[in-house]
Amino acid sequence: MANWFYASEGKQQGPFPEGQFRDLVAQGIVRPDTLVWTEGMTGWQKAAEIPGLIGGGAPPMVPGGGPPMMNAGGYGGAARGGSLAVDFGIWDFTWRTFVLAIGSCFIIPVPWLFVWYTKWIVPCIKVPGRPNLSFTGSAMTLVPWFFGFIVLAIALGFVGSQLLSNLLFIVQIVLYWLLIKWMVANLASNGQPLGLSFTGSVWAYIGWNLLFAISIITIIGWAWVAAAQMRWFCRNIEGTRREIVFKGSGLDILWRGIVAAILCSLIIPIPWVYRWIMNWFASQTELAPRGSLAA
Image (cartoon, rainbow, N blue to C red; front, top):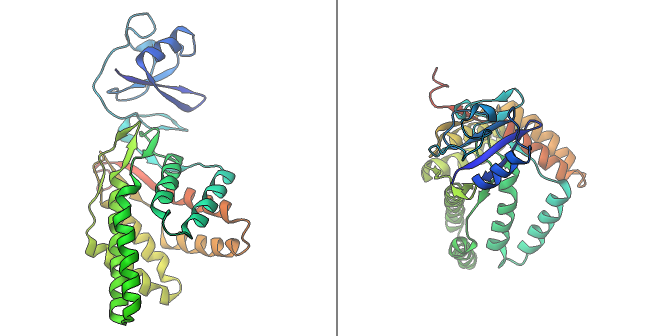
């Protein structure tokens, strides 16, 4: 059964199963001039332009696909792309972050708390053409990684070797790399897996993290390394018909980082600062048609 979307006051509504959508038509909520979309359509169209939708009968069934982007300039085809956005309530963020921080002090709940928090924050990210973003990962996947690392850290702590401590740092980076791959692979839209994968190599990821650690010595160089690493990360996400592009610069990251550090030192503004930074990173992350950058 096809899922339908309609536009109301510049916002995308849906998805609605075929039967429920026909009820909206019958109730007059979806009118002849309402812009609608369903799987397989290349762009938004007025309901009256779709045979069988307004005049009676079943809505047409068309091949599967993803909903096209909606933006302030209108409703375009799926290939047009657009920037990401983040939207979450300050108080919702605050109490959840407190629970995560306090619960993490007890060590054992960390995998479950991390997945719980991720399942909340991912739907707050708005991706053009991908409604109802969600995270489907299970905490049980993290359990062997997390507790294996804890055991290794305790064992190396008894040995007290600097060489082994450096090795533990590398192991930690590798675990973060595995975490990224796992998180990307478990993203879904409308309850369906997106089929994404992160293909950046572990050696490249280790290299970027070591470069970032070294760049901190330069005081400001870390910002340009962070921008370059973000571009590398986006280039290595595969499984989407559109290219993921990060357009933020090192200077953009630097001055925002300084402002964020100053404001966070006051404690109270932290939630607002966090949302501001996330919104900026999202706005600088765009979905572009394949090959458009080369053109």
